[in-house]
Amino acid sequence: MRNIKPRHIVAISLSTATLTFSGASFAYGEGDFFTRLGIAKVAPTSDNGELLGGADVHVDSESGPAFTLGYRFHDTLGVELLAALPFKHDLQVDGVTDGSTKHLPPTLTFQYYPLGGSNARVQPYLGVGVNYTHFSDEKTDIGASLSLEDSWGVAGQVGVDLLIDDHWALNAAAWYIDIDSDATINGESAGSVDIDPVVVMGGISYRF
Image 1 (spheres, rainbow, N blue to C red):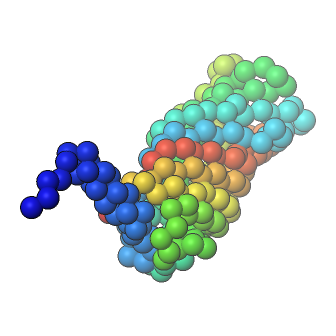
Image 2: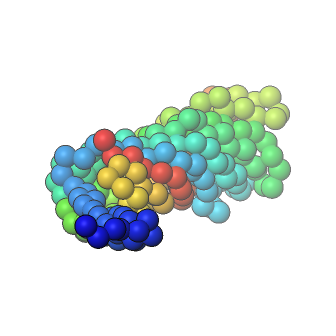
C-alpha cells in the first residue's frame, strides 16, 4: 500500500474544506425568524421647528443600543420591528440649551428582499412602514413645564446583511422616520418640534 505523507493529508483536508465552504448553502428566505443587534445613531434633521412665535428649535443627535425582531413570511417579503432603550436629546432654542426629552421610537416596517431565497451572501433589503414615538421626561432649564405630544408617522428603511454562515451575518441599516410633535409649555400651545431623524445602525444579525 502506498504511504500518504502528512503534507498530502493537509493538502487534501484544505481542498475539501474549501470545496465544502464554497458550496455551502446560505438559503435566506421564507420561515426565517431573525434579530439584529447593534448601535444606532438618531440624527434629527437640521430644521426642527419653531416655538413661542418664531424661536428656532434644534434637537441634538444621540446614540445608543438598539435591536430588531423580524420574520420572513415569503422568500422576498418580511416584517421587522425596530426597538431600543429610550434616547435622550438636548433641546436648544435659538442656539441655547434650554431642556431635554427622552423618546422611544418603535418602528414597524414591511420589507422587500430582492435576492431572498437565493444563496447570495450579500442580501440587501428595502422597507416601508409606520412609527410610533412616545416622549417622556421632558425638562427645561428655566423651570417651565414642557410637554411633547406622542407622534405617529411613516418610515422608510434600507439595509444589507452580509451572511457569515447559516445563522450569523453582519448588518447595516438606515431608517428615515417622520416624527412631529406638538409642544405645550405651562399648559399653553407653544408650537411644534419636528425631529424627522435619520437612524443609522450597525451590528450583527442572527437567524433562528
